[in-house]
Image 1 (tube, rainbow, N blue to C red):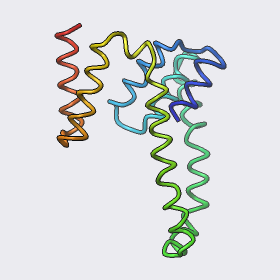
Image 2: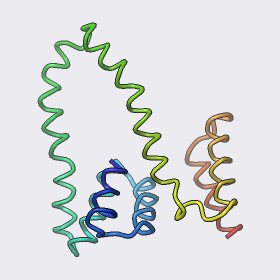
Image 3: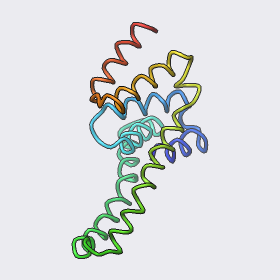
Length: 151
């Protein structure tokens, strides 16, 4: 969702700058709810100047998923132990990892990595979570405090 929304609102329609979009992604990740919905809500609010734009954007992002889940859930409960369904989900796992990696690469731009210190924060956070199994809330708080001190 992040790369799709960025393409639409930054590159195609120019409703937001890259810097604004990066800030919205950061805020969307620390607010409750799915990042894609939070991004759409804020973009709708900004682009359409108000609550109506936010409501329309949120509805437009949620509606296709809602309809798809209604259609699929009826059959999924019936066929969830089927070898074909299990094979589909086994194939989807690597695709989901690829989509998450693609979203991370979209955010690796000059706006986010200003200098080598930003890269060090990223690498430190990655190692803390991956190698030492640190909790994400603690890592975010530590990076926030270090960023406040360093910058």
